[in-house]
Amino acid sequence: MNISDAERISGAFEALKYKKTDNINDADLVIMVMCSVRQSAVDRIFGMAEKFKKLKKKPKTILTGCILKRDKIKFGKVFDRVMNLEDLLKAKKYLEIEPKYSSEKTAYVPIMTGCNNFCSYCVVPYTRGREVSRQPRKVIAEIKNLAKNGYKEIWLLGQNVNSYKDGKTNFPKLLKMANDVSGDFKLNFTSSHPKDFSDELIETMAKCNKLSMDLNLPIQSGDDEVLKRMNRPYTVAQYKNLVKRIKKVLPKIRLSTDIIVGFPGETKKQFNNTVKTLKEIGYGVAFINKYSPRAGTVASKMKDDVPWAEKKRREKILIELINEKNNHRKK
Image (cartoon, rainbow, N blue to C red; front, top):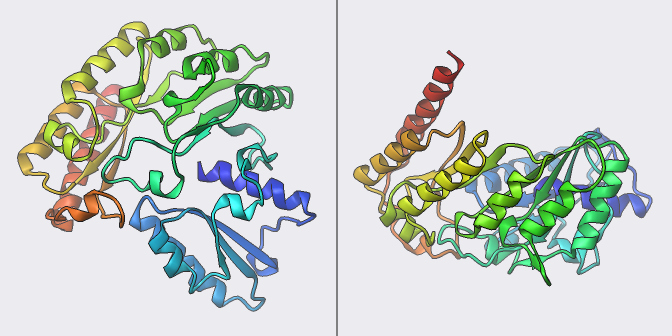
């Protein structure tokens, strides 16, 4: 999503006659797009801001993107301006600004923004607000233009794409409309929430010949109690049943997932349930994140009682498990 935001910012500023430079030393203006979801990302922004101060030609600096209120205050001391995307681009409908695509082969097309789920660890509802879906005719018009210009890979983006809804058009219908656009391109989408992954969507995916067979389906934990504390409204059994239904209709699907280790209160037994679940489902890829508190979320009020060294140990176990499975498949 940050890539897509940056492409729209580039498009807006080039329309104002700004020219892009690949050399930071030549820049008059530097705009950074950040995400407050993880503390590591916040720390990297601070590190880069310090580098700007050492440049001979001091550029004006703007920070935008997905920023917590607390982080806005801190970054206001190191950036000239800190502002949300709507204010930066002087437009409420910033998703409709013509982007300057950063790749000649791959394009990211946002179909919605925001989130209504309020997972207890996540800042997105507080930084991007509630879900807003883009009009399907505008999404399809952008895809048609990309196909016409030879793009080979098109991603439909949103914090929760399968909750997309505009009038009578839900995500399965939009996906089929995108698939039916003429052109030689592959279609992908991210990110999906298991609670909104309907049978209608599964059946529609089977009818989409342009759709990639790579699917990211975040589970976050393999333990029911941890999922409940995360405010993830499904059980491990329900998730496994969803995977079973997907694989039955789409036997060639390649699953990846997201997992948080060391969530507040996660015991060794609960972590072992996650290990067991990963072994059973057999993901090709897993994105493992060590839990870090984010101010303003429900989880930030919970006791962060898993030591960092233990979080790293659990992360290592899961990474090794995924690597072992992949090495076994290659043999």
